[in-house]
Length: 250
Image 1: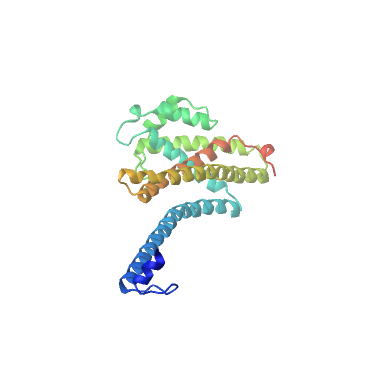
Image 2: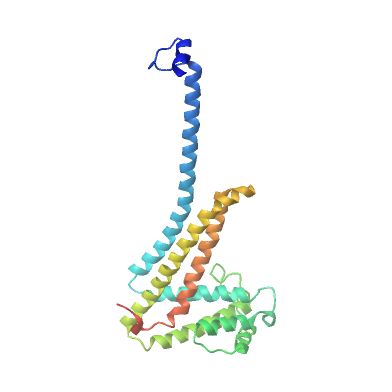
């Protein structure tokens, strides 16, 4: 049939098909395919870019711990960040300390740190607060009572840690601190990678709801990464009091 059609058109078998309309149609189709493939590649790179930025932050954090000769100060900074976040979670700058969830904060502190503080002491410390935090510091935004409560908890935790540290040799303590931080980073980062894989596999379904999957992916990825950093720092604080030189596998 094809050969008969070619004969009617005055074409010989094996002759190259050429026609201005046919050529333009082929060129147009080819350009559309190339543009589609380009958009697909661009989309994949945008998804990958989200993961790469997260990887840069985590690896930067990890390398900082690996290369630092002493991570004690960094550990204390992490402790302060975690305590500050919990004080903000269980209190409010717009209400008096008597209305805060002091019990919730006291339970969290006593579960994570061996301080054994009575709930009433938390309230007394907060209500005695008279000093506002320095403007521009990480404590900006706290009122006097919140700042006093943070100082009370942070001091109690540091004293408990100093007591624990006094029973360790300096070299062993440095290893414990580094090991505790790295272990939390590595374990939770692995869990985060599984969560990100699941998110990427399911995010395409958002298109059925007339939502841009990439925008949804970036928003969800940001939330997951924010939770990851909070969880890493919380686990470090939780585990640092439960680790000892005898537990290290060096």
